[in-house]
Length: 406
Ligand code: ADP
Ligand code: ASP
Ligand code: MG
Image 1 (cartoon, protein in one colour):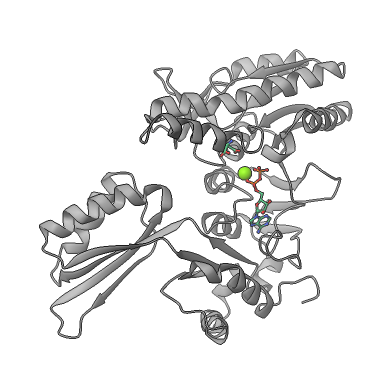
Image 2: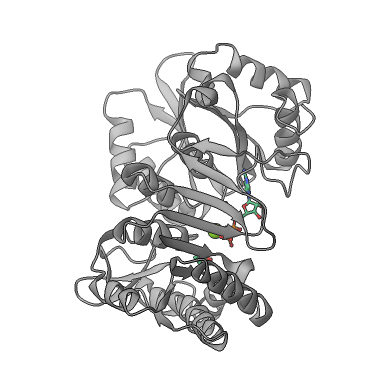
């Protein structure tokens, strides 16, 4: 069968790790499988390249950033192919462009539009193991693009779908998807399986073990995904369609996100159309607003609107908001970076009540103030002060009995 294996940054962090990856790939091939490998840049490499760019410019051009960042994955794909050949197997490294990954033109967070994989199929039929540079594609005009942070996960899932692979294995530095980040809560429990929907919520709420868009893609095209460790042989977590067992569990996981900023516009005239104007301008700048809260003052004449955006977009969002606040004669704009979003997720919430209340009570009991709240059918999120992030994750993990011993 055809298997796609994606190896993240820590799994290819140095040449020793790359040799270990090559051995695992060769083993999979020798078991009679066709193997397509997708690799990330060596861990820390993408951050390093970003900071180099910021050393030469405070506002580097996104087109050039993509060219720069895509180089990290090129290095590991070539090295991995060389390491596989050294073990006596035919291997060929491909850039995103050579793999035929065509994206839209939105630099630094492009979307995959199609994959023209004839060349890959030919190489596979000739017995090559393919090693694809993750995180990158090319526009119709041959401009190099990247797929957003963590984007090699998306490369892998999309390639698995295009090649009709039996399985997409995501190899990382933890044994699978846990009830929460095992690096924060050592008692976190590994899940044998998780539904696409829950995984999508956890990812978009900050659990970086899988990139959000990769989960979206896997759900849409029903690509079976397994998350497992490249450091051992443990079984991992299957991300799959929801089943009845999953509904019995009320809360499956706790996620946190420290990458948010809160912007507040104070003293906005309480009239129709104000929020529309503000959020349209921000959406036009391709900035995704997450939570929104509006409080009307006691005299009913003005309102405060607070919302959150990713930290990477906060400068731009603040600039736009200040301009609009000026136009609408608001009293002022403030910004807070010391916030975090804490969320609980579970498909069981659809059929169980009182889950949100229990979350709020638990936070209150530990003196953690809730700044904003948002809910959906299968999640509850709260914005809290950044310094309480780890505490909040731990106490919620505890109260919903997610630990190994729970
Ligand atoms: P890679 O470089 O392999 O893509 P990432 O660092 O992107 O790896 O993702 C793996 C990390 O995700 C883990 O080291 C862990 O700290 C973090 N993580 C956050 N939430 C979870 C969770 N619920 N389950 C597993 N890992 C999680
Ligand atoms: N190297 C890229 C990043 O660090 C993509 C990835 O690792 O998936 O975001
Ligand atoms: Mg990742």
